[in-house]
Image (cartoon, rainbow, N blue to C red; front, side, top):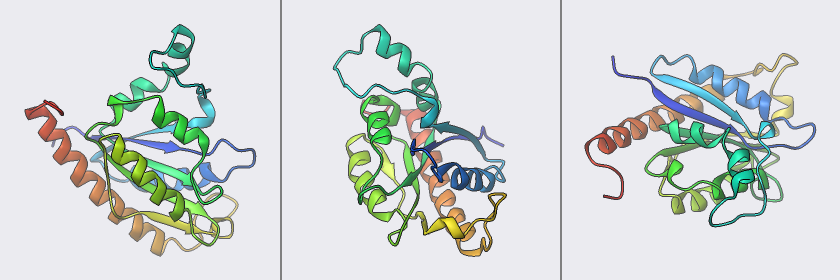
Length: 193
């Protein structure tokens, strides 16, 4: 058996009272059922990312990024768990994306969105454009939760997991295919060479 695919699951919301960890815990539980995946959860609330960008980060900024940058670099694939704020994604996620360059290159990105009537899909569609610029590949299939607050019980379990688990399986199948293909190709030839 080959080495597991390293998947970084990014919890994008940093708001007070956020629901993202409930959804991320559910999703990582589904992902960890696969022995072919090694899951690392990166919760942005744990990382004080600077908002002011610069071409060459000073030592203070490098120190702020040092806890998250190596984890992004080590990942073979990503899943972003994002809410939809004002028809888009959180600023915390944009800051993470913008502070990193090569960490995203030639890696697949999947999405788990949540929110009101659109279920986070407007945020996901905006992110597809952003991640295209980072030289990553977004997988088509997503998981979306329309009004998720009533779909989970007090322990964080889905009340009816049928549809969401089927969507997560499809997302993970695609992520694994792309992650393995890109990892194998990069072993043969570095990206951008």
